[in-house]
Length: 394
Image (tube, rainbow, N blue to C red; front, top):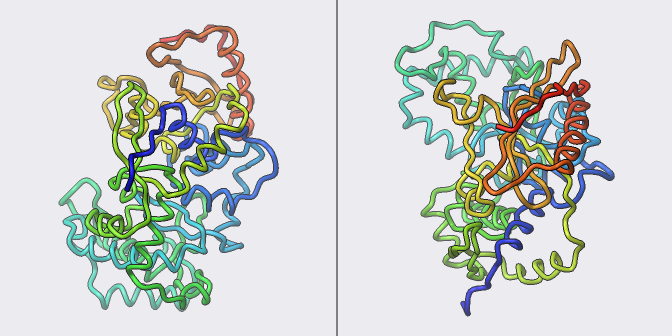
């Protein structure tokens, strides 16, 4: 490798936001499968303060998106499948041949984890599978079994443990969700035969996953490449990098320091193309706490100077901000964070507290941009934004 390619902070932020489809306005024609493929995956989450994470993430990229568009991708079109990256997520169905190692990997990990103590044996799991084969897709509510283990806080009933184990191992697949309840089916009834039968060697799977991660990260440390899918070990990632066609880069952080990373050989061309584009607009965006652009909190702090943590599981008295706080992205900077909640029965969205990031000021222009985004956000939840009249900064 020659001298490292220098990436100024302003360009690093533009590259990262462009990779996350957050640089261009969230308008225009909507192609959901393409959007998910470009992101790589979309995280699922049960919490609904305004909208569940997957709905909010997709809406942030194109505000023509509505919640009713999501379920058909999984249940009818088989355009996506559900499995585990760093958390439960949906991935493009065409990625399935490169995900076989993750099924094996998760099964091996669960076999060693203390959480799975009391997992029903192979015969009991086969009986559950046989029932699904006879009756079709079933949820956990269709089964009865003994009480939860008391060994740890995340304990599950035995039948739920068996269903989840087989789901992690690829022996069952999510067929659809109903009111967010997962329905399990045999994988041959969910995954297309052409993709299930496609054989990809393990080294080729690792190569594909690492290359795909790096494309979506634009530039990254090897730890960031490994964490993107969380479908390989750090050692496997290092072995890949030793033979990959990579360039060294030096990335400027938000505080002016620099760190070393790697990138694909075409990054300089991409930087030139981005530099030729018009400057990003100043539209305000309310991002979800599980948005892929901010889920790596260390990367977020390095590139944007924002320290962000989800405080849902922090006792209320110890929270620095709040239960569910949304970062505010304006152009290529995070300028604040905000509490927003929706009362769907009443059809009203309300703004709670608003906090500015260090060094930011709040004038009439920013207030107007936030108000406009709140009105748009309300429509995603079939609500109307109701200003409180005395919205003060904290």
